[in-house]
Length: 535
Image (tube, rainbow, N blue to C red):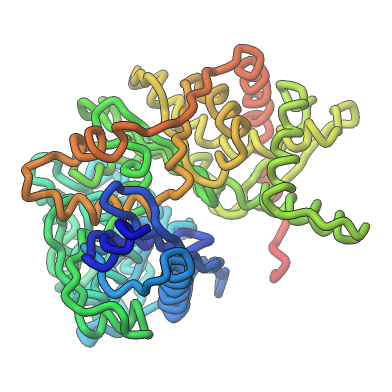
């Protein structure tokens, strides 16, 4: 206890804050990289005027709330206040569109990664660049706004992601970590900066639309992990900690996206490693030894926080539909006067899925709350479908609902394994889908036919990952690569459990996928014929 107090008082700690899709989390780690305290704030995206968004005032309410909760936990545990840290890191959901004018004014509401409103821009840019530009990338949102003739475009002086925006407000620096930047505009793996040929092409496209903007003038500077990215300003200190305990001058590492912090939190930044992040969305990141032979709309080419190329299969939908069903079951229990903790409900029903038929008894589920580019759907309608002779049991229902969270990921991953012949020894899983031990992990291993490991530390998620990147900033003077730092210092004694693919589960998931692919026209028909509750 005394040693921890001395470390905290000496500023030997590192603070990571990540703005996830359903929660803003702050984690404080010590010199041994273990968490000392954490705090969280729950929030939800809003569908306003047909656009998925978060309000920026709630960004700061959430950041302050998560930091205050962390500070209170630290005080309760160690009896001291947090009056300084060695370094700070900010992370957030990748992609999206946050444009600002010359006075720092926000020009339009934040357009998040969840929107599928940029199909035309995505297609044009992908054809021009000969490089896949997904709909959720910042550059696709910008070009779609140009094609739509949106008046605000001419006033853009800074185009930001959520992480880069928060970092800017805390430090005054308009920068992005290279992993986050790789979801803004394509990255050149040699120079570790935006791809110059594509920037010239984009400038020509803008001039063709009558705009004098240069894309290089409005994007954040690209920084790799371990690079100094500014210090906490006096104004930033007040934004982060209105109580006034944190001083200005604390260094910050480059702000990163949730893909990069997921790779960091699972020690998946070296070549031939990979990880799966499964929460509101699900994505797999595979660090490559060489470039892919083809260009695929289902595969993003992004980078690790150190700038190594990585293939990313990103699916917009994962646990939202699952969570909705679990809320319904919780409400049912309450109607009978039965009180069950949320964690117990999830664990019990997840484990119930293990009793189900390997093929889910013929049940079918689509978890599409929003559009899904991997299956070419601009909108989503959550669906549960069965035939009269399907095996409608609780176990089968839970199993099919869990299967549906990873079905679209399976479609994208098949491209890497079957067309590009990429082989992986294992994947590291993290996120809410893996919290119940041995369930989501087992099904994911069967779905992808790859051993899936979940580390004991992975539960801390991206906030811990960005805290590690903040700690790496203080180590960079030792000329240590990020890969060596994580392998030799952070994860050298890490524990965890690896689950091998089960043959019965593999066959059952394969049968489910045949049904899933065949039923996609049902989902498309639902989108076409079933409006939303607001329509």
